[in-house]
Image (cartoon, rainbow, N blue to C red; front, side, top):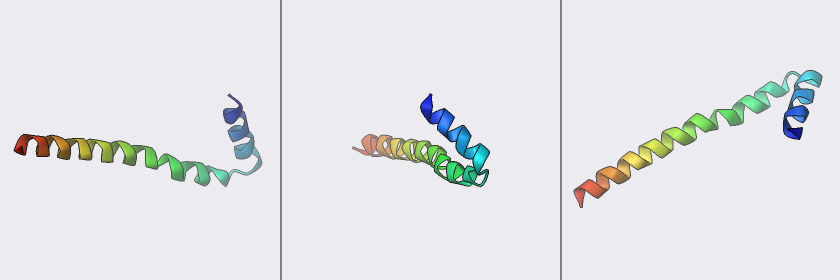
Length: 49
């Protein structure tokens, strides 16, 4: 909860901090995309053995 309050205060005082918040958020979909890719590769390799 404290994290959320600090985040909101930062956005109110300096709206340009939104970019600093958005950049790390782009890593979340990338993480899940790579996890799905590597899972598919592992399944493919397991089927070959």
